[in-house]
Amino acid sequence: MDISMNEAYSQLVEKLQAWLNTAIEMLPNLAVAILVIAIFFVIGKLIRKMVNRLLHKVTHNKTIIDLLENIVGVIVISIGIFIALGILNLSGTVTSLLAGAGIIGLALGFAFQDIAANFISGVFLSIRHPFGKGDIIESQGHYGTVQKVNLRCTIIKTPQGQIVYLPNKDVYGEDLVNYSKNNERRIDLACGVSYGDDLEKAKKLAIEAVESLDNIDKDRDVEFVYDEFGGSSINFKIRFWVKFKGNMDYLEPRSDAIIAITKKFDENDIMIPFPIRTLDFGIRGGEKLDAMLQKRSGQSNGEGEGRSEEQ
Image 1 (cartoon, rainbow, N blue to C red):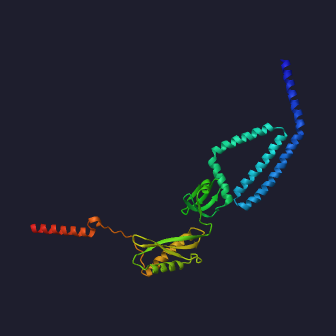
Image 2: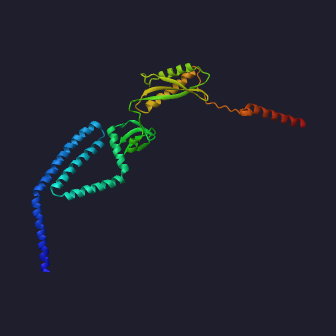
Protein backbone atom coordinates (compact mmCIF):
# COMPACT_ATOMS: atom_id res chain seq x y z
CA MET A 1 0.00 0.00 0.00
CA ASP A 2 2.81 2.41 0.90
CA ILE A 3 4.63 1.48 -2.30
CA SER A 4 1.48 2.29 -4.38
CA MET A 5 1.03 5.67 -2.75
CA ASN A 6 4.67 6.56 -3.30
CA GLU A 7 4.49 5.57 -6.97
CA ALA A 8 1.34 7.63 -7.49
CA TYR A 9 2.92 10.57 -5.74
CA SER A 10 6.05 10.29 -7.86
CA GLN A 11 4.05 10.13 -11.09
CA LEU A 12 2.02 13.20 -10.07
CA VAL A 13 5.14 15.19 -9.28
CA GLU A 14 6.74 14.16 -12.57
CA LYS A 15 3.63 15.18 -14.48
CA LEU A 16 3.43 18.55 -12.74
CA GLN A 17 7.15 19.09 -13.31
CA ALA A 18 6.71 18.32 -17.02
CA TRP A 19 3.80 20.77 -17.27
CA LEU A 20 5.81 23.44 -15.50
CA ASN A 21 8.77 22.94 -17.81
CA THR A 22 6.46 23.09 -20.85
CA ALA A 23 4.83 26.27 -19.52
CA ILE A 24 8.24 27.88 -18.98
CA GLU A 25 9.30 26.89 -22.48
CA MET A 26 6.04 28.29 -23.92
CA LEU A 27 6.28 31.63 -22.11
CA PRO A 28 7.88 33.40 -25.12
CA ASN A 29 5.24 31.93 -27.45
CA LEU A 30 2.49 32.89 -24.98
CA ALA A 31 3.76 36.46 -24.85
CA VAL A 32 3.85 36.62 -28.66
CA ALA A 33 0.32 35.16 -28.86
CA ILE A 34 -1.02 37.75 -26.41
CA LEU A 35 0.73 40.48 -28.37
CA VAL A 36 -0.81 39.21 -31.62
CA ILE A 37 -4.30 39.24 -30.09
CA ALA A 38 -3.76 42.79 -28.80
CA ILE A 39 -2.52 43.95 -32.23
CA PHE A 40 -5.51 42.42 -34.00
CA PHE A 41 -7.83 43.96 -31.42
CA VAL A 42 -6.46 47.42 -32.28
CA ILE A 43 -6.62 46.65 -36.01
CA GLY A 44 -10.22 45.53 -35.56
CA LYS A 45 -11.19 48.85 -33.94
CA LEU A 46 -9.53 50.80 -36.76
CA ILE A 47 -11.23 48.72 -39.44
CA ARG A 48 -14.61 49.14 -37.70
CA LYS A 49 -14.23 52.91 -37.82
CA MET A 50 -13.35 52.76 -41.51
CA VAL A 51 -16.33 50.50 -42.23
CA ASN A 52 -18.59 52.85 -40.25
CA ARG A 53 -17.53 55.85 -42.36
CA LEU A 54 -17.95 53.92 -45.62
CA LEU A 55 -21.39 52.57 -44.72
CA HIS A 56 -22.65 56.03 -43.76
CA LYS A 57 -22.08 57.01 -47.40
CA VAL A 58 -24.21 54.08 -48.57
CA THR A 59 -27.04 53.90 -46.02
CA HIS A 60 -28.36 55.79 -43.00
CA ASN A 61 -29.84 52.72 -41.34
CA LYS A 62 -28.06 52.60 -37.97
CA THR A 63 -29.08 48.99 -37.35
CA ILE A 64 -27.39 47.78 -40.54
CA ILE A 65 -24.31 49.93 -39.92
CA ASP A 66 -23.85 48.63 -36.36
CA LEU A 67 -24.43 45.03 -37.47
CA LEU A 68 -21.92 45.06 -40.33
CA GLU A 69 -19.42 46.97 -38.22
CA ASN A 70 -19.62 44.35 -35.46
CA ILE A 71 -19.36 41.48 -37.97
CA VAL A 72 -16.15 42.93 -39.44
CA GLY A 73 -14.72 43.47 -35.95
CA VAL A 74 -15.48 39.88 -34.89
CA ILE A 75 -13.89 38.50 -38.08
CA VAL A 76 -10.66 40.46 -37.54
CA ILE A 77 -10.38 39.44 -33.87
CA SER A 78 -11.16 35.79 -34.76
CA ILE A 79 -8.29 35.80 -37.27
CA GLY A 80 -5.99 37.08 -34.51
CA ILE A 81 -7.13 34.33 -32.11
CA PHE A 82 -6.52 31.58 -34.69
CA ILE A 83 -3.01 32.95 -35.39
CA ALA A 84 -2.31 33.06 -31.64
CA LEU A 85 -3.39 29.44 -31.24
CA GLY A 86 -1.06 28.47 -34.08
CA ILE A 87 1.84 30.22 -32.31
CA LEU A 88 1.07 28.15 -29.21
CA ASN A 89 1.29 24.98 -31.32
CA LEU A 90 -2.41 24.31 -30.90
CA SER A 91 -3.05 23.60 -34.57
CA GLY A 92 -5.30 20.69 -33.71
CA THR A 93 -7.48 23.00 -31.65
CA VAL A 94 -7.71 25.45 -34.55
CA THR A 95 -8.75 22.65 -36.91
CA SER A 96 -11.38 21.39 -34.47
CA LEU A 97 -12.79 24.89 -33.99
CA LEU A 98 -13.04 25.49 -37.73
CA ALA A 99 -14.68 22.11 -38.34
CA GLY A 100 -17.14 22.68 -35.51
CA ALA A 101 -17.97 26.17 -36.77
CA GLY A 102 -18.61 24.79 -40.26
CA ILE A 103 -20.94 22.05 -39.02
CA ILE A 104 -22.83 24.44 -36.73
CA GLY A 105 -23.12 27.02 -39.52
CA LEU A 106 -24.49 24.39 -41.92
CA ALA A 107 -27.04 23.16 -39.39
CA LEU A 108 -28.16 26.70 -38.56
CA GLY A 109 -28.40 27.52 -42.25
CA PHE A 110 -30.91 24.73 -42.84
CA ALA A 111 -32.84 25.41 -39.65
CA PHE A 112 -33.14 29.16 -40.08
CA GLN A 113 -33.05 29.63 -43.85
CA ASP A 114 -36.14 31.89 -43.88
CA ILE A 115 -34.69 34.04 -41.12
CA ALA A 116 -31.38 34.20 -42.96
CA ALA A 117 -33.15 35.15 -46.21
CA ASN A 118 -35.06 37.94 -44.45
CA PHE A 119 -31.86 39.13 -42.79
CA ILE A 120 -29.87 39.28 -46.04
CA SER A 121 -32.78 40.95 -47.84
CA GLY A 122 -32.99 43.52 -45.04
CA VAL A 123 -29.30 44.31 -45.51
CA PHE A 124 -29.73 44.77 -49.27
CA LEU A 125 -32.87 46.90 -48.79
CA SER A 126 -30.93 49.19 -46.47
CA ILE A 127 -28.01 49.46 -48.87
CA ARG A 128 -30.04 49.92 -52.08
CA HIS A 129 -32.62 52.06 -50.24
CA PRO A 130 -35.59 51.73 -52.66
CA PHE A 131 -37.75 53.38 -50.00
CA GLY A 132 -37.35 55.01 -46.61
CA LYS A 133 -39.35 55.80 -43.51
CA GLY A 134 -42.42 57.86 -44.39
CA ASP A 135 -42.60 56.70 -48.03
CA ILE A 136 -45.92 55.39 -49.34
CA ILE A 137 -45.42 52.00 -50.98
CA GLU A 138 -47.42 49.05 -52.28
CA SER A 139 -46.10 45.50 -51.98
CA GLN A 140 -47.67 42.04 -51.75
CA GLY A 141 -51.10 43.62 -52.23
CA HIS A 142 -50.64 45.93 -49.22
CA TYR A 143 -50.62 49.74 -49.50
CA GLY A 144 -49.41 52.07 -46.76
CA THR A 145 -46.77 54.31 -45.22
CA VAL A 146 -43.42 52.82 -44.19
CA GLN A 147 -43.00 52.97 -40.42
CA LYS A 148 -39.76 51.03 -39.98
CA VAL A 149 -37.39 48.67 -41.77
CA ASN A 150 -35.59 46.19 -39.50
CA LEU A 151 -33.52 43.10 -40.22
CA ARG A 152 -36.53 40.78 -40.42
CA CYS A 153 -39.44 42.73 -41.91
CA THR A 154 -40.73 45.99 -43.32
CA ILE A 155 -43.48 47.58 -41.22
CA ILE A 156 -46.13 49.70 -42.97
CA LYS A 157 -49.29 51.44 -41.78
CA THR A 158 -52.31 51.27 -44.06
CA PRO A 159 -54.63 54.27 -44.63
CA GLN A 160 -57.18 52.46 -42.42
CA GLY A 161 -54.69 52.42 -39.53
CA GLN A 162 -53.67 48.75 -39.56
CA ILE A 163 -50.02 47.77 -39.07
CA VAL A 164 -48.72 45.24 -41.64
CA TYR A 165 -45.46 43.30 -41.25
CA LEU A 166 -44.00 42.34 -44.64
CA PRO A 167 -41.10 39.82 -44.70
CA ASN A 168 -38.02 41.46 -46.20
CA LYS A 169 -37.38 38.59 -48.62
CA ASP A 170 -40.84 39.10 -50.17
CA VAL A 171 -40.43 42.88 -50.39
CA TYR A 172 -36.98 42.56 -51.96
CA GLY A 173 -37.82 39.71 -54.33
CA GLU A 174 -41.26 40.80 -55.59
CA ASP A 175 -42.76 43.85 -57.31
CA LEU A 176 -42.66 47.07 -55.31
CA VAL A 177 -44.34 50.41 -56.05
CA ASN A 178 -42.99 53.54 -54.36
CA TYR A 179 -45.53 56.35 -54.74
CA SER A 180 -43.35 58.88 -52.91
CA LYS A 181 -40.18 58.51 -54.99
CA ASN A 182 -40.97 61.25 -57.54
CA ASN A 183 -43.19 63.39 -55.27
CA GLU A 184 -45.88 63.49 -57.96
CA ARG A 185 -48.78 61.32 -59.08
CA ARG A 186 -51.25 61.27 -61.97
CA ILE A 187 -54.99 61.03 -61.39
CA ASP A 188 -57.02 59.15 -64.03
CA LEU A 189 -60.68 60.06 -63.61
CA ALA A 190 -63.30 58.12 -65.62
CA CYS A 191 -66.69 59.56 -66.55
CA GLY A 192 -69.21 59.60 -69.43
CA VAL A 193 -71.69 61.78 -71.30
CA SER A 194 -74.93 60.85 -73.04
CA TYR A 195 -75.05 59.97 -76.71
CA GLY A 196 -77.12 63.07 -77.47
CA ASP A 197 -74.61 65.63 -76.10
CA ASP A 198 -72.00 67.64 -78.00
CA LEU A 199 -68.75 65.75 -77.41
CA GLU A 200 -66.46 68.66 -78.28
CA LYS A 201 -68.34 70.90 -75.86
CA ALA A 202 -68.23 68.26 -73.12
CA LYS A 203 -64.47 67.86 -73.59
CA LYS A 204 -63.86 71.61 -73.37
CA LEU A 205 -66.01 72.00 -70.25
CA ALA A 206 -64.37 69.05 -68.46
CA ILE A 207 -60.86 70.43 -69.09
CA GLU A 208 -61.91 73.90 -67.92
CA ALA A 209 -63.41 72.43 -64.74
CA VAL A 210 -60.20 70.58 -63.82
CA GLU A 211 -57.91 73.48 -64.76
CA SER A 212 -59.82 75.73 -62.38
CA LEU A 213 -58.69 73.65 -59.37
CA ASP A 214 -55.97 75.08 -57.13
CA ASN A 215 -54.52 71.80 -55.85
CA ILE A 216 -53.29 70.36 -59.17
CA ASP A 217 -49.93 70.70 -60.93
CA LYS A 218 -50.37 73.72 -63.19
CA ASP A 219 -47.10 72.99 -65.02
CA ARG A 220 -48.59 69.92 -66.71
CA ASP A 221 -51.41 69.87 -69.25
CA VAL A 222 -54.75 68.29 -68.47
CA GLU A 223 -55.33 65.34 -70.83
CA PHE A 224 -58.75 64.26 -72.08
CA VAL A 225 -59.60 61.23 -74.24
CA TYR A 226 -62.82 59.44 -75.20
CA ASP A 227 -62.10 55.75 -74.90
CA GLU A 228 -65.27 53.69 -75.48
CA PHE A 229 -68.96 53.50 -76.39
CA GLY A 230 -70.62 52.40 -73.17
CA GLY A 231 -74.01 50.82 -72.60
CA SER A 232 -75.65 54.18 -71.83
CA SER A 233 -72.89 56.75 -72.37
CA ILE A 234 -69.79 57.66 -74.33
CA ASN A 235 -67.04 57.23 -71.75
CA PHE A 236 -63.93 59.33 -71.34
CA LYS A 237 -60.91 59.67 -69.08
CA ILE A 238 -59.47 62.95 -67.91
CA ARG A 239 -55.90 62.85 -66.57
CA PHE A 240 -54.02 65.42 -64.52
CA TRP A 241 -51.02 65.54 -62.14
CA VAL A 242 -50.72 66.50 -58.48
CA LYS A 243 -47.81 67.05 -56.09
CA PHE A 244 -47.82 63.93 -53.94
CA LYS A 245 -46.55 63.65 -50.36
CA GLY A 246 -49.47 61.92 -48.66
CA ASN A 247 -52.74 60.16 -49.45
CA MET A 248 -54.84 63.32 -49.14
CA ASP A 249 -52.71 64.98 -51.83
CA TYR A 250 -54.27 62.40 -54.17
CA LEU A 251 -57.76 61.96 -52.72
CA GLU A 252 -58.71 65.64 -52.32
CA PRO A 253 -57.90 66.75 -55.91
CA ARG A 254 -59.78 63.73 -57.28
CA SER A 255 -62.82 64.57 -55.15
CA ASP A 256 -62.63 68.25 -56.14
CA ALA A 257 -62.39 67.28 -59.82
CA ILE A 258 -65.54 65.14 -59.58
CA ILE A 259 -67.44 68.03 -57.99
CA ALA A 260 -66.14 70.59 -60.51
CA ILE A 261 -66.94 68.45 -63.58
CA THR A 262 -70.44 67.60 -62.32
CA LYS A 263 -71.18 71.25 -61.57
CA LYS A 264 -69.82 72.39 -64.94
CA PHE A 265 -71.88 69.84 -66.83
CA ASP A 266 -75.07 70.74 -64.91
CA GLU A 267 -74.59 74.43 -65.69
CA ASN A 268 -74.28 73.69 -69.43
CA ASP A 269 -76.96 70.98 -69.80
CA ILE A 270 -74.45 68.16 -70.34
CA MET A 271 -75.87 64.96 -68.93
CA ILE A 272 -73.93 62.25 -67.11
CA PRO A 273 -76.43 59.41 -67.70
CA PHE A 274 -77.49 56.72 -65.30
CA PRO A 275 -76.95 53.10 -66.41
CA ILE A 276 -79.89 52.06 -68.61
CA ARG A 277 -81.22 48.51 -69.19
CA THR A 278 -83.82 47.79 -71.89
CA LEU A 279 -85.82 44.55 -71.67
CA ASP A 280 -86.92 43.38 -75.14
CA PHE A 281 -88.66 40.01 -75.63
CA GLY A 282 -88.99 40.40 -79.40
CA ILE A 283 -85.99 38.26 -80.29
CA ARG A 284 -86.58 35.58 -82.98
CA GLY A 285 -90.34 35.82 -83.25
CA GLY A 286 -91.08 36.43 -79.58
CA GLU A 287 -93.45 39.13 -78.39
CA LYS A 288 -92.27 42.51 -77.17
CA LEU A 289 -93.00 43.30 -73.56
CA ASP A 290 -95.36 46.22 -74.25
CA ALA A 291 -97.38 44.23 -76.84
CA MET A 292 -97.61 41.27 -74.50
CA LEU A 293 -98.89 43.46 -71.65
CA GLN A 294 -101.46 45.13 -73.92
CA LYS A 295 -102.67 41.76 -75.18
CA ARG A 296 -103.08 40.41 -71.68
CA SER A 297 -104.84 43.58 -70.60
CA GLY A 298 -107.29 43.22 -73.51
CA GLN A 299 -107.97 39.59 -72.69
CA SER A 300 -108.69 40.48 -69.10
CA ASN A 301 -111.14 43.19 -70.14
CA GLY A 302 -112.89 40.80 -72.56
CA GLU A 303 -113.37 38.15 -69.92
CA GLY A 304 -114.76 40.73 -67.55
CA GLU A 305 -117.33 41.94 -70.12
CA GLY A 306 -118.39 38.36 -70.92
CA ARG A 307 -119.09 37.64 -67.31
CA SER A 308 -121.17 40.80 -67.03
CA GLU A 309 -123.32 39.84 -70.02
CA GLU A 310 -123.95 36.36 -68.65
CA GLN A 311 -125.14 37.80 -65.43
